[in-house]
Image 1 (cartoon, chains in turn orange, red):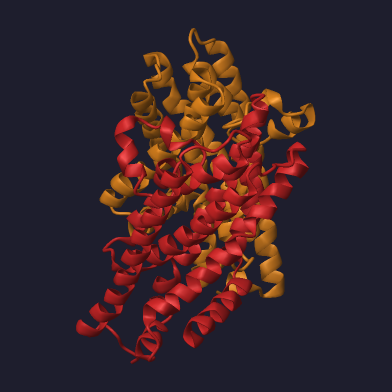
Image 2: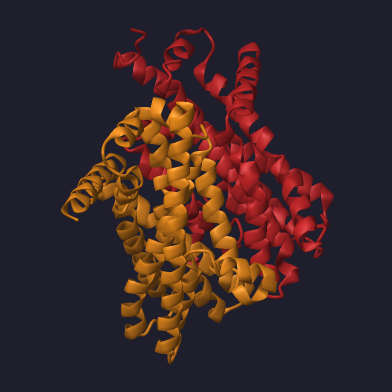
Length: 265
Length: 255
């Protein structure tokens, strides 16, 4: 157990140092946060154009929540960076689990993603004068965190799948982000999709957490429904954790057998 | 002219080889699903042309800023900037040739989005005023070339390009009225948004799709022209200064 914690601890430290190469606190606050708040305002204005005040709230919540998806997916780029720098091979041959080391390395994106999403939600609500009751605003934090954890596991899976596909990481990130945004109920209400699409989407990470978030922020929320949605999200997250670990295992076995690019750097 | 044509050929060749440069064409139909789908799901079929136009403008803007904006910084990264600066051709003209190619290729998103809207939602967007559409598109294309040249220089001159690369997305989608017309924004944002050429271009293009007779076309065309020319001139001056500054500071090197 202590060995596992050591690996997780070092991976996290490495991830945080990666983060510092991308952002300073100033670029995060003035660059990134201003961008995410603008994104929320953009979609909320689209809501105003398409449907009026109730749609503004719908799109405000959805477009703020999806920020966490974007940040978590950023780890897709790091798997490729690991390969280019030749460090992936070193971790694979070390006596530790590469999946664990890699998955722990991007965990900070779950925290920063949750934080960005919450700031965008509160700032957007304040700017657009969308009322958020305090219980909902408080409950939003653990619910978004749960959604971010869940979607992070999908991000790890995508990273494993495209780690060796040269030059496809950026596209894979954007495609995954857009597809989740379109079909996950963030911008387009879930109940307007056909039943087949809804059935598939129920297995996509974050969709249950998003429904929990919408319920928590509704007037007179049904807290048992919030908890039920969160429960489903935990089940979905567990399934994606197994899928992500298997995908990484397969990718590494394939690379080992073929002496492939993941190990060669 | 020869140098500009060589730049056109170079950019075409580079874009053919880069998946990152072409990804906006893969993402454009997804923007259709997102924006047109958002209108469709709310029973606002009347807003489908506007949403499809939004998908076009967002894709165009993304290609211009991401691909066009990266031209000079990539030249610096791969140390080809020095060779371009040492050549007798004017550097701003080379960049102009390259960004024009980027924007020219980017225009392919228009038929792509039209087709995606038809396939996904069964709506063939019709252009109510073809003449106005042609003028608006021509001027908007010039505006896009101007912006791409401007950001190409800005991303290299700025101390922290990351701020800018991030900032040149959603804030401009709002200010440029890419989906929501500028007239719906708070009044105090009006003067700021009018500095962005797309706030005029977007209005003109929307008016060309609307069966109602267009109003205030002269003012909008003038606004679009002035904003684009100012951006273009700023871009050319910045690109010239970029080379001068590198020479003066001795930061050119082929060692």
